[in-house]
Length: 355
Ligand SMILES: Cc1ncc(COP(=O)(O)O)c(C=O)c1O
Image (cartoon, rainbow, N blue to C red; front, side, top):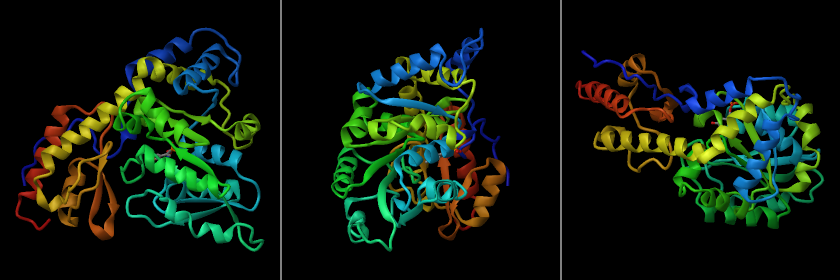
């Protein structure tokens, strides 16, 4: 079969893209001169202030190397011995972190099966019976991901209701915000939108992703709850997440927060996914029934077609048993790349093979 030229962008992940030029420029600027290490430099101090302005709240912000480390660090500040985390079965901490939360935190993950990777207040009902039982772990944290691993986005109300239920049980709310830029763009694209589903919805601690949005590396952990912020400085080092040349992480965040670049880039990735959806939704075998809420979609493609397409322009399998794959867009995916990708998909699926 004759396939068109492979697209210039990958649809495998938002991690495959390079960094935005303004981020690179910020790193270059940060490269001038000698500054105190471990976060005492002026860029880090300025960027921590920028986070307080972003949330219009006296948050504590710490920068770390990456997303898995950010999750482990944040959760380490929230947990005591014998305490457990309630999370969706599909959550990154449960299936994509090589067991590091269990091993490093020494905490049980109570993973709840869900259809859309979202937890709901009713999922916490069973936790009630565990509280106070000396033979069982004590559920202490509800961990959610926004955007979820299945590309769904919690509404403000959904997070608020879950937080209310968690707090009523004496538990705390943690949000993995590896794709916070996409979520913010999806829920209105403003600072107020971001505040509404985090600060105002009862989140105690969250990560604020940068890498997938167009950074090079590094993540931020934001503490709304001062109780967890109190020992965070020491726990970051304890879990090996303290970077000596901190200014190179914070400079990226300074660029991302300036003129809300992170929201612009999250929006670009989301609209690329929307365009890809619009151009493929009519291919019925893909079973793309609902538009993407952020920057990913999960079509169905039979094994034979899948392997032809993946060799041509790689993307990941998602649920092999269901023939489900993942297409994900990054901040710099062009219309031309979308057209090239769609042309290849159409060529393979129209080739007469079963889907
Ligand atoms: C939901 C979620 N959380 C966290 C991460 C961070 O992972 P990493 O350690 O690769 O930066 C990812 C990366 O894919 C993710 O999808």
